[in-house]
Amino acid sequence: MKEYFPNVSKIQYEGETSTNPFAFKYFNPDEVINGKTMKEHLRFTLSYWHTLCGAGSDPFGSGTMERPWLDIKDPIEFAKAKMDACFEIMEKLNIDFFAFHDRDIAPEGKTLVETNAILDEVVAYCDKLMKETGKKLLWGTANMFSHPRFMHGASTTCEADIFAFAAAQVKKAMEVTKLLGGENYVFWGGREGYETLLNTNMKLEEENFARFLKMAVDYKKKIGFTGELLIEPKPKEPTKHQYDTDAATVLGFLRKYGLEKEFKLNIEANHATLAGHTFEHDVHLARINGALGSIDANMGDPNLGWDTDQFPTNIYDATYCMYEIIQNGGLGKGGLNFDSKPRRASFEPEDIFLSYISGMDTFAKGFKVALKLIEDGVLENFKADRYATFNEGIGKDIVEGKVDFETLEKYALEHDQIKVKSGRQEMLESIVNQYIFSK
Ligand code: XUL
Ligand code: CO
Image 1: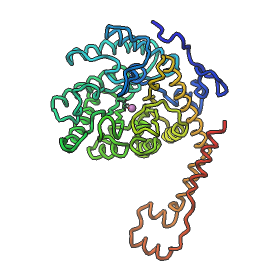
Image 2 (image 1 turned 90 degrees about the vertical axis):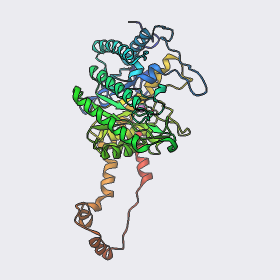
Image 3 (image 1 turned 180 degrees about the vertical axis):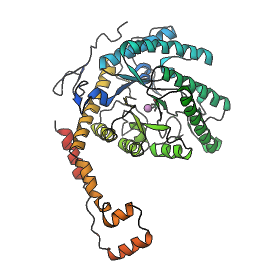
Image 4 (image 1 turned 60 degrees about the horizontal axis):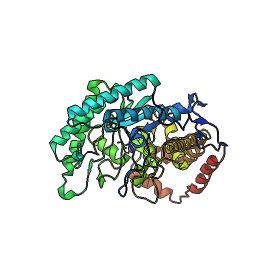
């Protein structure tokens, strides 16, 4: 097989004193922690779209990325070359999983029949490489946002024929994901939202969205796909009002339509922050509702209000996210998928590797910090103490549902001289810093 990145050899763990940019400083893939290797804990995943398809274009300029397969003219050979490059990158970075949209791996043909045939050919090639290398598919999904036919939405479109087309596309993408042993299937509704109520029947769009998801659940069962179905919330971009705004909105929607047992959430860091939350807020909310499925690990830029999809280097985000994952007992079938891309000016092929190294090291360090915080019980003990009044007396009665407003009024009239304690936020932030700074 052709080597696309001859200048980069397999990335080794060299420890935190290393000054080699092409080495891991914190991610030691085979280090065993609590009975599992770091690799198994973190389940790092390559994102096909940004890594293999990202051209580096933006609204003001064309693509910048130098990629060694760009001169291949034949569309199928081009697709297979990207697939080869994908497996080379995973091998060199010690990444076990990848994730893709149908259109990332194979181009569309002139008709849906032709498109499906092209997809089948590339999928067969992918299957062969997976069998040869042992690499795994974390999730598959359908791109129902790039093609102009989806300008009004996919399952939330105003055109019934587009709804049918979208259903056919998801059906095929689910079959392909199953064939490749995918562990999850993701729904991110890129065009599932609206721009203006002047032309939108929001009620019908929301109901159709639920109908569509129900059909997906039925088809999953019909074909015996045992992976998890995941919804990825995002508040805006591309549409002004995305229906899947954040974790809380999606959980409420799923409950309204009786779908809460069928779906978990794929939480993306910068989608949560665009919704005005912290990353850990959405991960936590998913976790305490038993709905934490997987993570799209990236970060935004606090000075920019759009989806910058940057490789994560923020140690606080990584620590707090890993804190939730550990409390969740791990990610199950999920993983840490880097929904991130090198910056437009980081255009050389080597930048792909340098970007992944920084993201993987950040999460590996965050994992260790979070584990130590949990083992030492610093935050959980503080929280337990903070809510201790609910463990006995009137607090216990409240939690056990034994009191009403009248009993509480009687109690309050006798106990109205109340002393409350400090929340100690600054102390806790300082303790977290201490754990991050210490080795
Ligand atoms: C877009 C985004 C997607 C999903 C998959 O913001 O995050 O790439 O992860 O469709
Ligand atoms: Co994403």
